[in-house]
Image 1: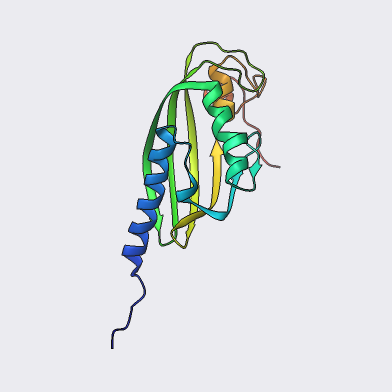
Image 2 (image 1 turned 90 degrees about the vertical axis):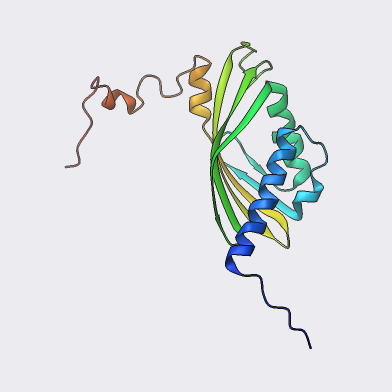
Length: 167
C-alpha cells in the first residue's frame, strides 16, 4: 500500500516560487493568456491609486492593459524573492518609457523606474490573492509632480525642516 505524504515545507515553497516566477515571466512577455497562473477566485489588492481587482478580467482590463498603454519598452527587474510555503513576496522595479497617458499626465517620453512590492498566496497550484504596493509618489515625482507639495519627510533628511517631536 502506498501512502502519499504531504509536500514538505521546502518543496511547497519551491513550487510556489516556480508558479509566481512563471507568471511574472508571462507578464513581462506581454502574455494575454494568464488563466493558467490564476485561481478562478483570484483577487488583486493594490494601494491607493491602484485599486482592487476582483478577478483576472478586472486585473487585465484595469491594471495590466492600462500599465502597458502608459509605459512601453518595459524591463522588469525583481530584486529579491521571499517564499514561505504557499506565500511568496518580492520587491523590484520596472524600467519603462512613459509613452502614454498616466494619471492624467500626457506622455513625456521619459524613462521612469516603477518600484513595487508583491505578496502572493498560492492555492491548489494557482495564485488566488495578490497584495501589491506600487510607489506612485515616486513615479509622479519622476514625471515632475510632487504629491507632497514640498512637505515630504525627505526635507527632514536634508536638514531643510526640523522634524516635530512628541510632547
